[in-house]
Image (cartoon, rainbow, N blue to C red; front, side, top):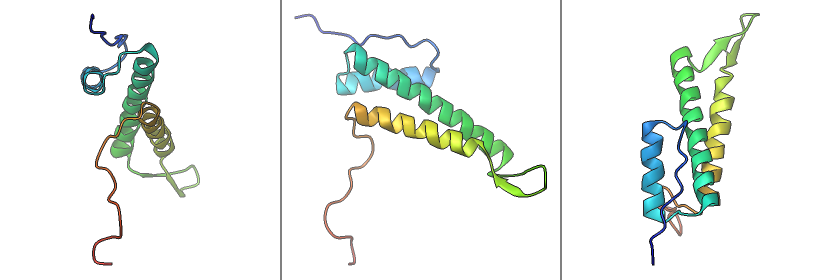
Length: 109
């Protein structure tokens, strides 16, 4: 039987996101259109989160408003929301990224 390849419509993604897309598709066997589209959408959200975080790093976490009061940078909310969309896409694909949580009581308790 012919091995299915993931559908790759990766225009608009950076080179690192394309590599991550191919790696995750190969590692987790994502070959269906819905899974590929969910992963692609999640990677676009990840890129947007990283862009927002870069702006925050450049400008600082706090800004002054027109009255001179310190306020949180508005891009913090944007970065949080896009990062949440990336994590939601991973959950929808049932991907376990990172270390699994430890079971039982905490050490030293």
